[in-house]
Image (cartoon, rainbow, N blue to C red; front, side, top):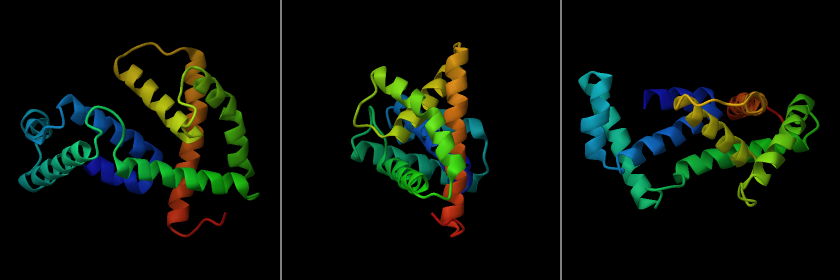
Amino acid sequence: MLIADQLRKKNRAEYLLYMWQVEDLLRSFDCNAERVATEYLPQFKADEATAGKMTTWYADLCEMMVSEGVRLQGHLQINRNVLQELEELHGRLLKGGKFPYYREMYYRILPYIVELRAKGRSPEESELQTCFEALYGVLMLRLKRMEISPETDKAMKEISGLLGQLSDYYCKDAAGELEC
């Protein structure tokens, strides 16, 4: 919860990846808020006020996942909205002529996106969705201590760089400091 609040303000890409991880965590507890509260949250040893906020936050997410039909797979609407906001900004950055560095980064990763889609990604999925799913997949492999090829590692660094730059622009745009 506290991590999510910090990431939401500072880095939208990391926030989205974190929230996907939270969704998977909640799925591992079958979106049962009671189980999350008794089996997962005690490890944080938070003070009473923080523990109460955490319990409520996770319970609300569990309830949302069940009500939105994403208990087994998919993403919460709040997370899809974050991706949509990033996609809209991405489109504005590419259309305008004021961000050649961003455009150059995008064209550098475009072959990776094409390759990922050729490996079975859904054709209706956006390019940014493909990028986020690739990064999330590699994150999961790393958590399992599985080996990642040098080619994949290079591609993920390039994709991560673009999403990091997009996140920086998002913060500037939200503060009214970006003119596309």
